[in-house]
Image (cartoon, rainbow over all chains, first blue to last red; front, side):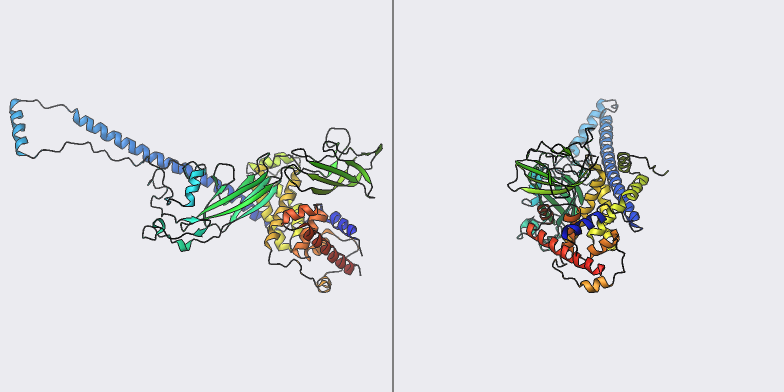
Length: 366
Length: 181
């Protein structure tokens, strides 16, 4: 019967750096996903450019049309006058007496398509949680998403101007019926159709780096990274990097505008401990200035630090309670042999009341 | 033109970021064996491992632009794979954590092995463990995490982590003893 430490060693040695050829066909799926993602990005960018071109064209045509009419009317006004004779004056006077007074002639200017009032991409009732987002975004929705420009005209053909009014939904629960959400032919959304399905899936890619996704989305998804910019990122997936020096709770929120007109939201709290150190698994004390000393790297000086290095016989070869003093591969006055050692670090960050322990096998390479 | 072997890691990553398919394929070819071995360790079977490898690489290519070359690239890739596996295992809530194994029945189906256990044999043993035991054993014994770190990442208590590790070791001991007979 193997002892526990032998068992651990057996698996660690056998599997830590194992290489197993993956099955065929995985690359094909990965490649298609990668190319789809890049195509989607290009397509989105192309649509934005196309939308801008269409809007620009409409504005240009409208302005040209308006200018043309204005010029034509001016030309009519300045057209060479007929020669005025006393007979013609008398004739005009008699006409004016016999006919009803003619309305003052106005220049018939066709209204330009561009409206200057507030964008109306989402006609939302007062009190909906969208209003809260509008507030967070400084009154416009959703600025900075990079997808929908904030000055897009209504009825331009890019975004339908007859979007249904979304029902009032707070905290994903259907609200009591109000005039704003009453079901009418123009407002086909029913409160009872709003259900909570959204949830956030966060994957830690690396220290401080997360891949975010949502499950249960059935429409546009917007992300709020708790950075004061509101729901500034659009997409079913997003990357989130913890800002340098940030610690404590970070409330990540996702909001989904469902295709049936409802909105759903989900939250995710990241507890950031800025005191987690970066640790390596080797040291090379050869005097080249690289990895000569083994010392965990803290972003901020820890409140408590205790690091011990043990050799294979469980003898302490190094101990330090100073976070700036690391191991240089020497024990007392003796140069340690190359090989594996166990590092046990106990530390407490300033932001945390709980001490943590990291155990790591490190390789002394000579 | 194939990507040369002398290309540096940074050049390879930069080429991938520019969307060069050959570089992406080269990165996959270079690192997929080590990532697949991680996925095999955490997954219940080869099919799950294949899905996890696929998902890991999609995340790698999505997240590549955030890699700042401040640490080992291979280490970063391994972390992506481990985290993907942990997320997957968290979703397997339906599988009981204290599942008992019929060791005789399962080990009896194995082929006779030589005295030296190969990586695939060890993975085969790990895959027989319930998901909770397997995850904690992997994190503690192979990745070198402490119980408090395991507890944090899995959302369990330190004591649960310790218990699961103990049970995982006991089961593995029993399986190895069966094999040695």
